[in-house]
Length: 445
Image 1: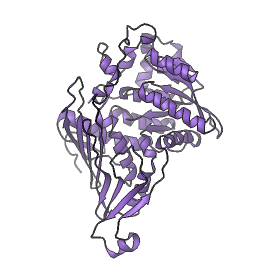
Image 2: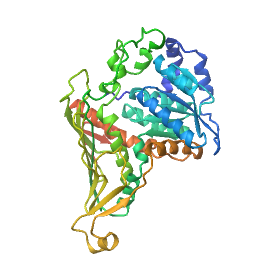
Image 3: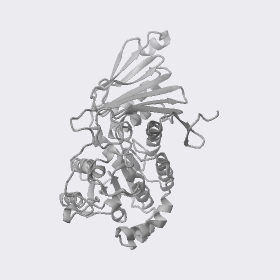
Image 4: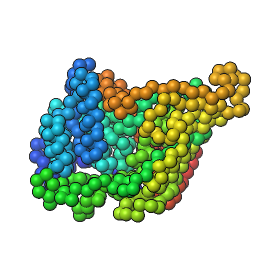
């Protein structure tokens, strides 16, 4: 996987030239430069204006979720602009939300009335849009995975600190209560020294995963609502002729996605980093699998397994297949006990409890504090998606760190991106904590 060094300042320096190629007014970039770092102070009752960037399946869903939150919370936010490179999607969203629609995301970022952008584009665009938005004084809700590469994730972390913007990563399951209850149980000493975390994400579909419907008339030569700005959509990815499968089914291709690892394992690794005493970078990562069933145009595997070790003396084991739907329980093993966060293994599902099972070896001090029988701890039954949206909007007002902040997401992204690289290169990879880079050999202590 490419680890291209992604410098937002270099991008902004050349943006005017690129803008001319894309047909964007040159004064757009002057407007953005002038607004760098500027943002209004939001009061408790101020309506937050949102720009929705990307109106494919996920973008449509997020638009509905933010609108639902507004409807149930005194109009807390409002969609004032939508964007998509596909005219049909852009026009439909603009009509639905009675707002302005754009083919180019930079016109959304340039609007002074936009307080935050919601990014639901393919993965390879997340970093560019988020970096520009923060430079323009906007807060960011960015769909998972946070970025396409580790270098981009590091850039986002640095930029959040520099600009003091709020960035929430859209793995909504992290707002569910079970991870926080598990974190407390571990911190209280209920499982002792942490040894191994395990999880899974399994699905099965007769169509083959990510084989979304294709609009036959869409493309760069399409007329009217069939027009699709393919050149802009490719963006930082390698240039190639229009390919409808790559556009509508982008998660099947390495140029735009990491497949299972980035689309699904983010929902597992991010909450685990919340459960753990603190987020962790791995010391080494390996991944295995292959295209065993869905032998179509896809490049990414339909079955993928990840193993990682961490320097504090614990390991991670994840399994996934797009051709079998049976999960394994989501749990964390310790020397003194095991905490099970998801009995059915569905990290995005709801549960009303977590369970702690002590080991037989626990001593009298442990028994006096926790007992030596299975303990069932209730968890809140809230709507994690609505809680995640609400947390983001609340943090925009308070300027506090959101649930899935940039640094927790960075730790998850490193493990996930290393697994993709390990699979593609067929070797174990190591993380150098001093240089914050992936290396081929274990760094010297």
